[in-house]
Image (cartoon, rainbow, N blue to C red; front, side, top):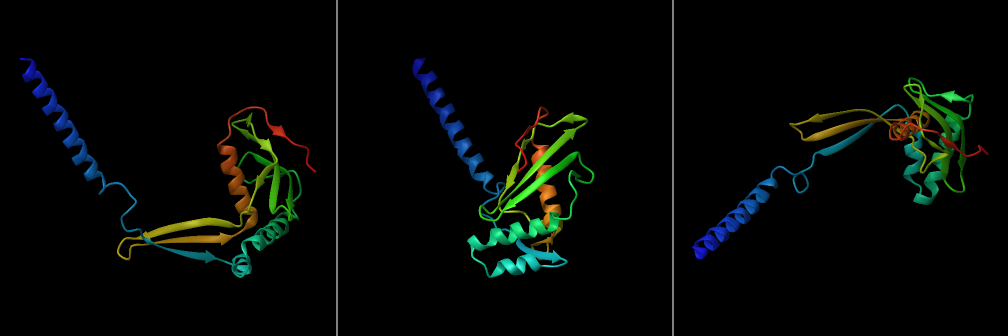
Length: 177
């Protein structure tokens, strides 16, 4: 009787092992990774001045260009500045060309309650592209992405994502320099 129980136990283990291997092999058709990926076509809407100026630069030369573009886009903004359609207020910003980084002092509320932000929020490299739309052509197996150069809107999107990920609570704000 003990031998029969052992034999049944061994057969059950073998069945489970073989079933697991067969199931895992079938996942290869479902899981992404090794299969063909669509060709991605990036198109720009409007000017490509920043992209064109970055094309011939080394990586160390790119961030000062992006910092300057951000400063140019935000220099005429009166502070405090509230991002349209959100509850985020940019109190001040500063770009440091030597460090190749831009910092933003913000305050934010969600449903009337303060969001626990930690200002300044430093962004490096300064963003300059904004996603407009995308489309997929199954016949050609291509995905077309449309971008626009807009440093001001790009910063707004990054800050919106930052605030969306923060809990409610008291904000911590460093002194704007």
